Length: 90
Length: 206
Image (tube, rainbow over all chains, first blue to last red; front, side):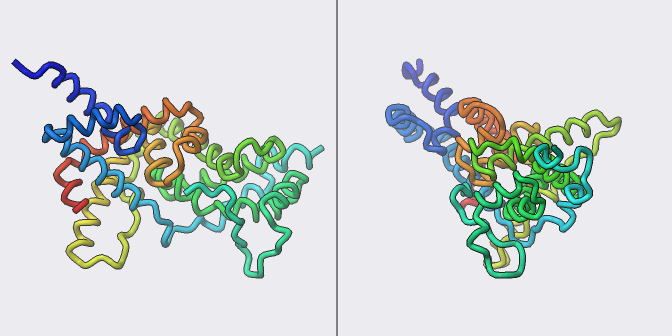
């Protein structure tokens, strides 16, 4: 027979890993997840993987070498459908 | 990082004019000065283009939609009331236009698959070769995982984790509540984590 609340804690923790990594959990909820993850290999790994995922995705964010094309204002300059803003058309 | 309060970089090759603050450029743009509008929007053009590249996964479509975003912003500039930052307003137009483009794409008979390669960037040059190889493998896997996400989840992940916007600002741009945004972000991270695998992520995270 399992420890009462063990399954509930596990499922709850799995559902809140992203919120945990995000720092979105209230202190009591954070302590609950911490307590559970200390004895749960799956959730401990889940936290490490989620942190690594967020870190890796954040690493995609740089703008080095990527520039908007020079054509971005072409439609604005050519008037486009509707052309200028409403106040200047009046 | 949210750009609020950030000075507007001067896109033209002369010394920045102190009169060219975001507020003064905005006022001139709203009065119909297209040059002021271009200077105002140029400060965010690279970020808007990059966002669209991430969301659409196709460079030529991202170029086309960036032009459309700028046209929509110009046409709607007099309706901008400053309730959010200009950047947030522009980004929201970009997300809406990306959604419209994806909607058009989904209606095509043979939908164009999103290009995972377009969702990547070159790895930083400072890493040693073995670390760089590991890093670029992870970047490819991340690109594939992003490409496979449904558009609303991809938008959440890109705005919050790639762009580094606050939850509040990202939710505003996505046009949903913060609670709904967090739920989407959580779903997106779970799917990306499942697609890449815990082992690969933890190994790459060192």
